[in-house]
Length: 159
Image (cartoon, rainbow, N blue to C red; front, side, top):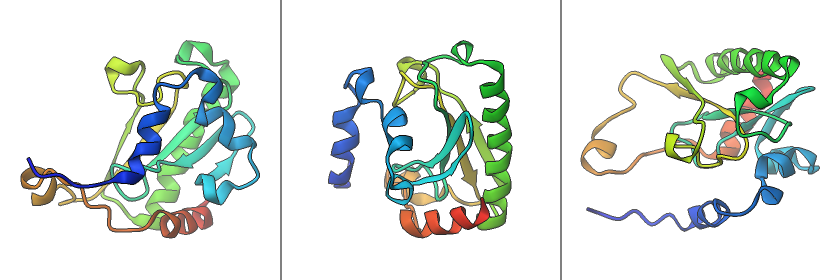
């Protein structure tokens, strides 16, 4: 297997096993730099943040402010806003990126693939015809063709 050096991921890997007091989804919305934190929208109960380690260009997450690991831990107004924002994300992504489809999902628990398993969140991943090419299949490498800040600026306008 070939190696792709990605030293910027070390910060992400190191924070995975920290306690709940270090939850990035709890800390980032309270900071005063939404652009640096990749937060494109703040609602009453939830916010929208770009994934710093995206599966595809424009990979968004809708996150409740409430710190809970399960959907059952959310009140009805939060659940309603959470899924209204998922819909708003698909509209913004359609306007800004024009994908051919979406993967939308929630990973509940570490065994289900949740990288941050202590704070529930919904992933919205835009997909394009042909976005899986030889690189991930043969080269085991995913190519992200747009910088995070360029994607942020485009999505921010769409919200």
